[in-house]
Amino acid sequence: MTTVPAARAVAGIVETAIRTRRSTIRLTEPAPGPDELLDLLAAAATAPDHGQLRPWRLIAICGNARARLGEAAAEAAPTADLAERSAAKHLRAPLMLALVFQPRDHPTIPRWQQLAATSAMVTTLLLLLDTRGWGGVWFGGPYPNAPQVRKHLGVRNGEQLLGYLHVGTPLPGEAPRTRVAADVRTKLTWLEDNAL
Ligand SMILES: Cc1cc2nc3c(=O)[nH]c(=O)nc-3n(C[C@H](O)[C@H](O)[C@H](O)COP(=O)(O)O)c2cc1C
Image (tube, rainbow, N blue to C red; front, side, top):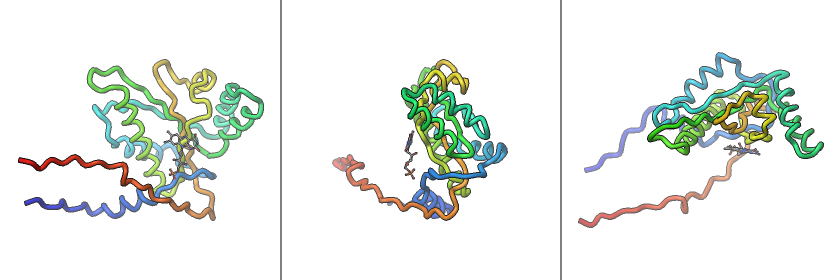
């Protein structure tokens, strides 16, 4: 006889948090400070991670440091217009978290698994921010591979900048965006063979 497992008491709350989370693009002050960020990061670091390699590090960029990073990114832009736009992007949120992937050479844990673990950590961090009332969104750039940006942030050889989390307070009065449910029926295949 098979029995259905008992759900943990937090099941409904966790599921609601996941189903209602949205990325927040329009952000304002304040943003979480260093103590809260470390606390959130400790929680996010519980995400699945083969070998607990934690192959990542974050760089928190706030205040005038955002404008200076914006200048470095602007240098990498191919046109003056894109330079201006890319510089402005660095001032959209009070806090930017540069996501640095640090893959290790490992005999049994390939790079792709380390990248998957890093992505799981970032996704968990976004969910935690959202549940605490902070807003956050993951942007891939601008120009994460540009030498100017890598040098400015001190991204070392072998490391890869996976973009930035913009973090802050959702603008007051913004209605939460509703989500169109994904049709996942074509995303799941069952293989079953009950033959004796
Ligand atoms: C690795 C990664 C990079 C992303 N880069 C961008 C980006 O550069 N620009 C953008 O508009 N959205 C980007 N997105 C998508 C947003 O972060 C966000 O997921 C999207 O706006 C959907 O919002 P939702 O998270 O509320 O579903 C990226 C997402 C991921 C996972």
